[in-house]
Amino acid sequence: MAKLIGGITTSHIPAIGNAMANKLEQDPYWKRFFDGYEPVKEWLAEKQPDIAIVVYNDHGLNFFLDKVPTFALGCAKTYENADEGWGLPSSTNFEGDEEFSWHLANSLVEQEFDITTCQEMLVDHGLVVPMGLMWRHLGHWPVKVIPLAVNTVIQPLPSAKRCLDLGRALGKAIASYPEDKKVVIIGTGGLSHQLQGERAGIIDVDYDLECMEHIISDPDWLARQSHSEIIEKAGTEGIEVIMWLVMRGALPAKVNALHKHYHAPISNTGAGVLLLENPDAA
Ligand code: DHB
Ligand code: FE
Image (cartoon, rainbow, N blue to C red):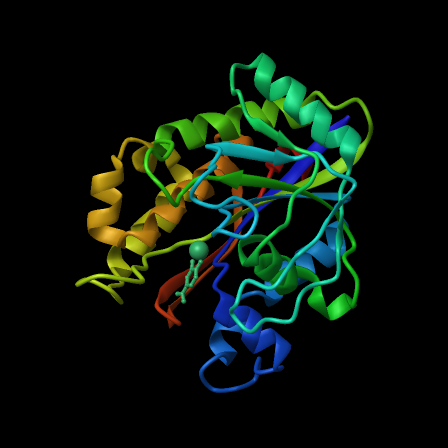
């Protein structure tokens, strides 16, 4: 049976991709931020997962404003990255696991989450930057990748509660896969940031830290909040934190929080890292 061994949260800012491409990890601006990933990299090296489900939002590379699915699951053999205009080098391709993807798709639809299935999908910085943070030092991608795109870009967005519920359905879908596979799930984006308008640049450190604590022990606290409540505190793009709820919902109610790290600002954003282990798989 497939086992979800843990969940990870991370920012996905393109500037991080630039810092990795230019090897700035030891630069004073970046050092503390990158140091926050070392325990996660060590845990991944020890646990050797087979599959990573990456929950991210497409920022206009694969879906543009004319067609935006609420939830879209990659069901392809491989996924390509492409130039988004951030000056990032394009990543090598990511290998998928079609059988596992279709199992998730079937199970989610059966559980009344009518997701979009994508047999071709370009993946943007929302997925590529987190993959680099976890595994770039290896020089290859050691896991098969399942992209799960959540619309956080154009109204109407899914509610925070809907994202938590999707995660719970995903947890059941993973657990019902008949082959032995070790799975990790990565919730990307957030924490507070707003990239345009009068409040551009706002970061609410207290709210970010509250979100991190509640993601660990009481995700329903965040799931009860409306988009307006989240955006008022965390900024318009801070709404990306709802994707952390998809990650969290897939894990059991009680998790082992093995690592937490917060650094602000990176670019315009509060950057939070969590490593949550599934106690049933520890
Ligand atoms: C930034 C943050 C994001 O989430 C993103 O998608 C692009 C840019 C930023 O802070 O620069
Ligand atoms: Fe983003």
